[in-house]
Length: 327
Image: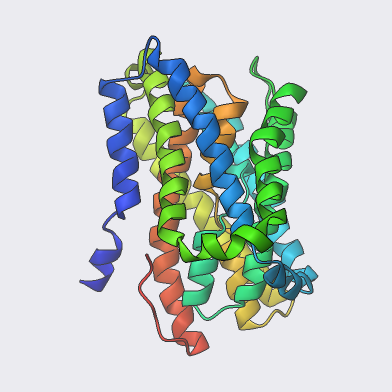
């Protein structure tokens, strides 16, 4: 029964699916579309401002000394994953609906998550300080590296321009840095209102999903996407996650990392951020493409939560940490 409970989607995943369905049935059109776009821009800026304000400088200093660990996570996130994504896109794009193969590549170029990487590392009894530093650095670097790698690998008409990168810096990186600089004044206020900041985070993502899937529905995404495509996407997500989990585990042991460091490497190196991926996609790609681009990411998000919840409990037994239910 405990295992079956892990298979139940969390409330946010249910909200994502419901939002996608609502957008398909009732997309934002006419005068509502530009207003919604303006709201999305503001909510994304607020999301990353609050993320910057939550980032503890002390945690950065404590975790920064583990440079070998961070190199391992960086290699998994921005070298191993992109290679796997490029191979997948090259060999499977003729079998998938337009935009889906590109979405798989985009998924593989994204940074690690922050919240779930740290949560699972903590549950498993791993090196939390290093996980905080590594996951946070991955997200900050990803704002620049993801669009640059996407531009390098893409061979379509939707190339990534310097204007798009500048827009990402302005909408995401600048608010993030501003929030972190203002942490001495706003940090404690933000920490005391985690429920409010969580609502902002998830609300911004849901707004982007609604807008993206509305545009995708207007462009006929669901007429192009067959049931077999969804099955293939789930299988690809499982294979990608499995390969990276095995690679990070074996590499951690090969290079002599402690079990606590191995936990941080495995969980930070195998994650892909929905929180960063959805906003970046909304800036990087035409609105009509965003729905197809983020669909693989939404599926991978749920699969990584399920698999890592089971894995965290297994690690907790090895590290002597009392297993804690994941949120």
